[in-house]
Image 1 (cartoon, rainbow, N blue to C red):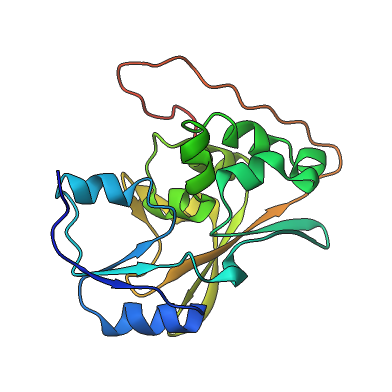
Image 2 (cartoon, one colour):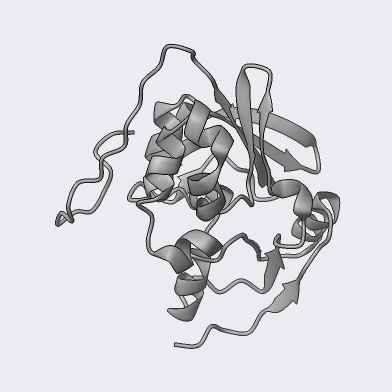
Length: 195
């Protein structure tokens, strides 16, 4: 199918994106598009405005911050899968990212997009919950930090306010932790059983 008509916006800064989100009625954020675009093609999502975050370079990073690792919301699954820092300090995320879709999906899909979509069948929400991560949301009232356990409110529902953008994910590092991600074969329900 073909999506309905919409106005496309490509801001260069996070502030510009927040201003657009606040000033445009019925606007949706486009991260990697792996969840939103299929919904638009089926006309299950029909935003009047699409705000594409792909030009905002400040949202794509993986870096150590003291005893934590910070990951920008626009960081792709492929970047997570190949990150030397994550492979060394938090192998659960690269393991999880490697199970998402195919190479094309991993090169386009983003961690922030997956979390903001809040689909319990997604791989990354379960990993983020298991790691006790924190999620930074930014909006017109400033920024706030939400614990992963408080972020996912239900099926396709998150704690993000309509005028907020998921900007960063912070994962605390525990020196003595061990993790693994095993994906069960396709089941009839297809929903995560942990998280």
